[in-house]
Structure formats: structure tokens, C-alpha cells
Image 1 (cartoon, one colour):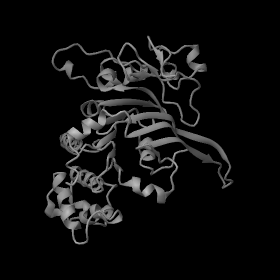
Image 2 (cartoon, helix red, strand yellow):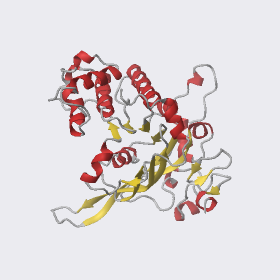
Image 3 (cartoon, helix red, strand yellow):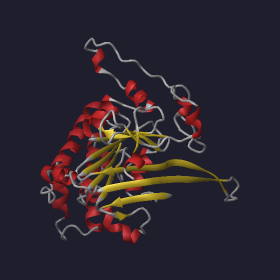
Length: 355
């Protein structure tokens, strides 16, 4: 591929640079709910994402984890501008693309691609694989006339498919093969960032490992940075350098993978990790204590005051209902580890420390 030169060395060099490739600042997405009978007056809004911030380094990988409905996929769609944010900034290479018009946005479409969760609905069943992959090549004028098929076959081979099957339709492939086609389509425009929106959750376990190995190879060989959206904590631990835990539209804990998994500070993160399967019990190690959350996830239309997790938290006190906890640096865990909890001790106010 033409971007093979951007290999692991280039990725590591970029990762150490001072300015992140992608900076998300206080990103919000509120969906209005209108009255019935066509009156058109907005009564309330669904606060799908409400103030999300994170950085992504060149060649790095950030995992967004949390329960279904917490805003992970909505965040990914805003980054690729499939959705226009209600508020906030999406700084890509220093340019805020959050509110750009379509014509201004087109050059950035090449750099920010997405791989969707469902490989059965993300491909047009009426188009051949060749047409699906070559469309972005034509839109962005990336290959000379007559060279499209050669490029399509190169991409198919890169993702582990038979190049001779370019003239087949999506229904002739398995779920894992269709996901590889979706990855090839994303690679066609040579992006710098790929949003992987639960790319293996719809696949068999054995196929999941193959697709994850493919994504790891692409990250290593091409230096592509990933925002990896998932609810499978094991997959995220395997693939991502940084992890951000979301709950009800907000990031409640964020930090390096090792710190999040070995020393989680937020009660919600602790509950998520306690619910993950533990292979240690198979080897005769006593099972870890399971934290069972009480109650349902509150509605994003009317989230709780203060800390949004307080209605299910065993540590909640009066202050949790009146004051929303900011993300704090967790000094006991190491640099870069932040959590939004009044009772994650010791803590240092991140904003005050950088003022």
C-alpha cells in the first residue's frame, strides 16, 4: 500500500509529539424531542453525549467502553461528522471540524473513517465489492483511470480476502468477510484515524480474534490511530493503549490501560471490571467479588443531578446529589489517570494543577 512508509516507527514518533492528532473538547450531542400532533415545539432533549473530552495521539488507540446507550457510538459519529455536534470542538491537526460545512469538510473525510458494527447492513447489497471499495477512490480522485480494479484487489489482499472475488456481492460472504470488506473500504482513502464502532461484536468468537489481529496489523504497519468503541473489556484491554469509561453521556474515568484495569478508581469502572469473566477461576484461583449494581440506568432525557452514577452507587452521599464531580488526576495510580468521583482518594484537581 502507498502508506506502508507510515509504519510503526513513524507511529511511535508521532505518538511522542506534544500535539495530539485528534483533540475532542467538551463535545455534546442533544437530540430534541418534539411535541406530538406536529406542533413542533421542543419540550425536552435527549442528552446522548454531554461534555466528552479526550486526546488521541498519532498511531495511538483509545478505547471507549460502557453500557449500551451511554453515548459511545454517538461520539464516534460526531468525530467523523456523520452527526453535527450540538456544542464542543473536534480539533483534527489543530483545525476545528465540529461545525464545518460539507464543502469545507470534504478534505477531512479522507483522514477520518469509520468501520461500523453490523457488517450485514453497512454494505450495499446491490453493489459488488469492487464498486463498494472503488467509490471512495473515485470521489476523492485517488487513482488514475483504469487503475481502480488493481487498487481494489490490493486492498482486498491487504485485509485477507481473495482479490479474485472483487466481482461478488456482499451476500456471498460470511459476516467476518463482510467486516473485512468494510475495513478495506475505510483503508481505500488512506486515513489517519479509524473509528471502529464495535467492529467484532456481531461476529463469532473465533472470527473476532482474526479481525482483531488484522486491526492490530494495520495499526502497526500503517500507523493508523484508532478510537475503538466496545463493551467487551477483554478486547479493549488487548487492543487499546488508553481507555475512557463512559456513563450516561459522560466520561467518568480515563487513563492508560494498565492503570484502568489494575487500579480502577471510579465505582462504575470497578463494577464493569467485576462483571467481566475471570479466567483465573478456571485455574483454581478464588473468584473475585462481583459488584452488583442496583436499579436501572437513568433516562438521558432527565439525568440525575450532581453525579449521574449516584442513583446506583454504593458510595453515594449528599454531596453527590448537589455537586457534579470533575475529572480529577488520580495521584496514587500514576500520571494521566483521571476519575470523576468525590470519593476517589487521594485526588488533585486537574484544572487547578494546570492553571
